[in-house]
Image (cartoon, rainbow, N blue to C red; front, side, top):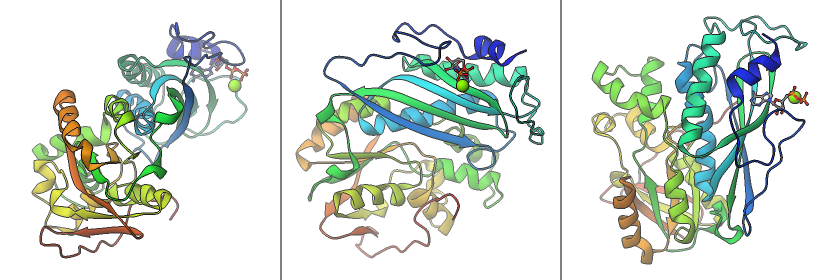
Length: 335
Ligand code: ADP
Ligand code: MG
C-alpha cells in the first residue's frame, strides 16, 4: 500500500463544507460571513502523551478531542481539521525517506489505522468537523491535528478578559484523568471498579464544545484544563493581571477521587492533574443564575470554585479559609 492508498482508504471522507478537501496541494476553506478563523494545533507523542500500547480507537478520539477542547475554550465552532501523522515502520507507508524501527509493542498496521481513523471520524462526525488535509510520514508515532473553527471576533473567549470580582467556574469534575494515570504508573493502587470509573476521563475525554458556545456572551475569560487547574487558571490570571481565591472544598470531584482526597496524591490530582479537558472560565456574578440554567440544559455540572481578586497568583484555601499549599502547579513537559 502506498502513502496515497493509505490516505485515500483511511483519511478521506466527504467534505461538503470545504471548497476543496483532501487530495490537492492545499485545502480551500471559506469562513462564514461575520466570523473570524480560530486556529489551534495539538500534538500527541507516544510515550509522552499516551502509552505506546494505547487503544487505537480511543487514541483517534483523543487526538481530535484535545483539539476540539481548544475550540471550546475559545468559544469557537469547530469546522475543519488537518492531521499530520508520523507512523512507525510496521505501518505500510511507502515512499518516505526515513526508516525508523517500529515502536516496541505498537504494531501500527492496517488494523491499527482502521481503528485509529474510526475513533477519529466518530468524534469528527459528532461535531460536524471535516478532515480536509494533512501529512503522512514515517517516524516514531506522533499525531498532530490542526483545527480550524469560527467565532464572531468580539465574542472569542480570551485568557486575558477576567475582571475583578468575576466568579471562577469549572465544568464537569477535576482530576479523574490524573488519578487513572497515577494508577497506570503504579503511583496509587485503585480497585478495578475505581479504575473503571475514572479511566474514561483519561482515554476518552469529552470536549466541552456546546458549553464554549453558550459562554460566548457570558464569560469574560476561558481556558481548557489540559495541564491542571492551577496551571491553566494561572494562565488566565497572568494574562488578565489579576489573582484568584479558590475554595478547595468547592472543587467538583468524582466519588472515586473524593475517597482519595485526604492523600497528597488525591489533592494533587484535583488541583494539578492534567488531561481533564474541562473548561475553566470566569464570569460576572450577575450571570450566576444563567450559568446554573446552562448547566441544567447541557446536563453538565458547572461549579463556582472561587473568585477573581486583586494581586497575582492563586490562593487555594479550605472551607475555614486556611491556605492549602501544593508542591507542584501542573504538568510541564521537558521539566
Ligand atoms: P504534498 O506532497 O503536496 O504535501 P501529500 O502527498 O503530502 O501532498 O498529501 C496528499 C494529499 O493528502 C494532500 O491533500 C494532503 O493534505 C492529504 N493528506 C496527507 N496525509 C493526510 C492525512 N493523514 N489525513 C488527511 N489528509 C492527508
Ligand atoms: Mg505533504
